Structure formats: C-alpha cells, structure tokens
Length: 419
Image (tube, rainbow, N blue to C red; front, side, top):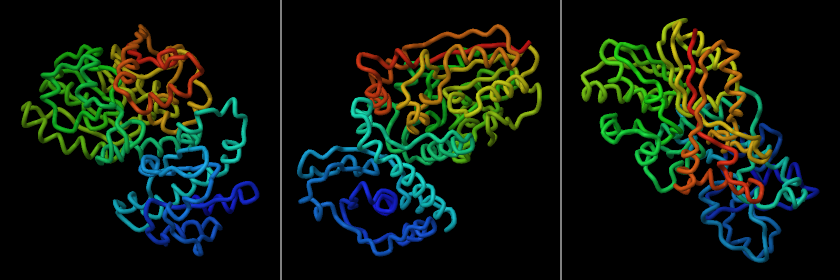
C-alpha cells in the first residue's frame, strides 16, 4: 500500500520501491481496499529486500517496528525514516468479522496516505528544523477530530488489554523499559504487599502517580475510577472502602473493561468482597448518575481526553456535595515543540495531549471546584528516563539542544473539592 500511494501521489518527485524481509505474495485484501480509494496495485509484485540491495537509495522508510529492527544496510548513505504503522494482517486475524478485518486495512491505508502526503516536506524540507526528528519519531499526524482521537486511543489501549504489548505509547513496546510494572509502581509509592494482593494482570504499568493514597479513602465511601483500565487502582481501592463501600471503574476500551471484569472473581476470592463493578463509557460522558460518588480518582488518563473541560464538568456532576477529586496525571510546564505535539505515539503515551499546569487549575476552577491543590511529582519523568523507556527517549531527542524532558513534562497530583 505504501508503494501504491507513493506512486499515485508523489510520482513526479519520488521513485518508490517496496520490499519485505520475505516475499509473501500480493495481499488481495490490500488490493481491494486500495482499489476502493482509486489506486490499483493489482499488478504489483511482492519482493524481498535482497532483490533491491544493489540500488543506492536516497531514503529507506521502514513501516513497522519489526522491519525497523531487521532492515539490512543498503548501498550508499541512505537516510533512514521510520513510520510505525499497525500491521493490518495481524489485526485482521483477530477480527470477529470480514467487515471488521476490512476496517483495519482501511484505517492503515488512510494512515499511510497521510504519511505519504507529507513525505516530500520530510525529505526535502528545511534541514535545520527536520534534523534527527524525522528519523526517530513516527510520522503519523495527530488528527484533531475528538472522535478520531478517542478511536486512536481506544485501539492502542485495546491492543495492550489483549496482551499485544504493555505500553501506553505503542502496543509493540514497553513503557517501563527494562522494569516490570510492579517496579514502576513502587516508584510512585505503591506498597509491595498491596501489589501482591491484586489479581494478576491488573497492573499494566500505565500509572504516573498513586491516586489511591492521595484520596485518603475511608470505609463506606463510593469511589469512581476514571479510565480504570484493567482495574489496578480499583482493586487496590476496594478493600479500603470495605464491604459498605463501593468502587465503580469506567473505561472507554471494551477490551480493558472485559479484562477487568474477568479479574473480579479472583478479587472476591482473595478479599471476600463484592464491591467493585466496571462500566464501559467515556470520561466526558460518564455512565453514572448525578451526585453518586464521594471521591473520584484517575491515573494518567485525563491527559488523553480530547475535551478536558467537559471531563472536569462531568466529575463535578457525579460527585456528592463535599466530594473530592484525587487525580494523578501528566502535565506540561511549558509548551512542547510542534514535532512532539504532532506525534500520535506521544499522544497515546500521555505527553502530547497533556495540558499546562495552570490550565488544569483553570479547568477545575471553571467546573466549580474549590480547594484546588496541584503538587508536581518530577520523579515520575526521572523514573521513566532511568528505565530507558523508548517513548521518553525519543521525545527527549526531539527537544531543543540542552533541554531535558523534565523541563517540559511533570507528573501532577491534583486534589479538589465539590462545595
């Protein structure tokens, strides 16, 4: 599909070839979806990279992480770019219907087109501004349409829930570098004894703080966990609110909700409690009645919302008078470079969508909250960098010379009260 789009859109500027580590034959589904878009690739031939090794290419573009790792060295001083597209073949294998499989192909087809449309600028643009960022960052632009953002987030986190990775940034990488999710959780004050009590697989290493401690939970309280994922914080909160209390987890990713629900039996067996439920829903449209919760927690989720002011208004709506918010989230202390803001992996990885610290205060204030307190936790970013996290290293490389990631990004504890 990449060769087809390049020849169709950029044939005057770029001579394109495509090949793989091995030849698998022409993919008929790819032919079909490309024809739907007006591009006929039926005459193309599947090729192995060895067939092209004699050509002195100006640029080599790898279009999946496996190719990026295994791509051989070509003649000449070819520039290397990487675009981390999902593999539609692998996605189609897990599809529940032929139409769902086709939708995976169509989405990847459209992402490739968006990439190819930008290709001349990336190859021939201002070298002083492009530099190494083109070679290290996935070049998939962030679509500003809220529904598109939600779908991108849902797909990536769905892949994590399905066991296709353990990363908020890319389903084929780990957000924890060489550390386990429990190792990372210990950086935020989670106690080893508590971590051993939660059901296996509930901790996916997606935290950026410890809201259950910040919330100072009491027995009998009703707690709402926004973006509950596989249930990590919900399962820790359950014993704290006790048999008279209740925990409601809300997540917009069906696979995450299903994974959390599967763990309920283990949680009940270990604790003797039946006080947790998980609901499918968006934090901007919570599936919860007015004035239900005593406390709301959220762990590295609100930054992913395309409509953060509405999310704060929803929190105010569902809290009881006197109820409180305890949120751990990523925030930025100064505007990120445009190159980082436009990277889809940086959005999924909770960086590109993060709000300025002062804007978070303003959103909570305008929603009606009082006693708003913001406490930066710079140790999170340091922990991720120390763990050799791939996303954080890549983002750091895109920053101005001499700048540190901690100069831009901080983990922020936010507490507030509904009057």
